[in-house]
Picture 1 (cartoon, one colour):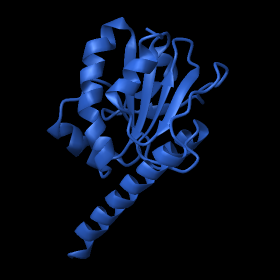
Picture 2: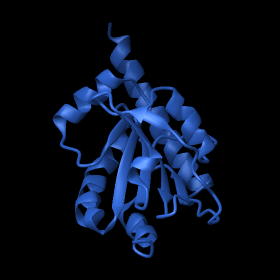
Picture 3: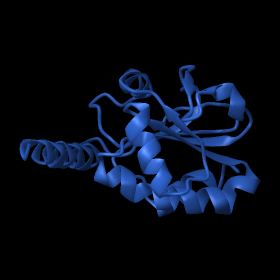
Picture 4: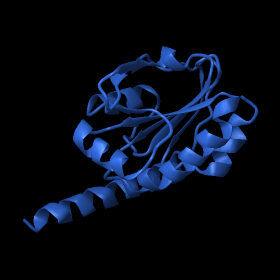
Length: 171
């Protein structure tokens, strides 16, 4: 019974180390304007499916995350603040959880998130890979311009300053 918490802590440490190493060795990546996002159709916590077309014409930040990932959880309050600050200017955060619905719903119950959370489970790992997450880092974020083109991707934490630097010219 005591091994379960130890395994969770070990998984979190590995995720944190992977994200930190990815950010250090791969760094953020600004992509060419022709880079596009693969289509997806994922459910939210209420079971309604959403595709990228739901947010057409907005500057989008897609964040792949998991409840067991400390850097992921650390980013969320900043994403909430930025969604509130820039949402009326056309910014839209989308969280894609890389786990099943139950732990995501339990986590969301403890914090009020003002942007959509979609549940991808294991299929989200492949979607993130298609967007450039070649090492499987968590968190992993992708920024899209208003035309739906990938303009930036980053393994590891995405800071407020980096987000503002990227989105302000796009809004």
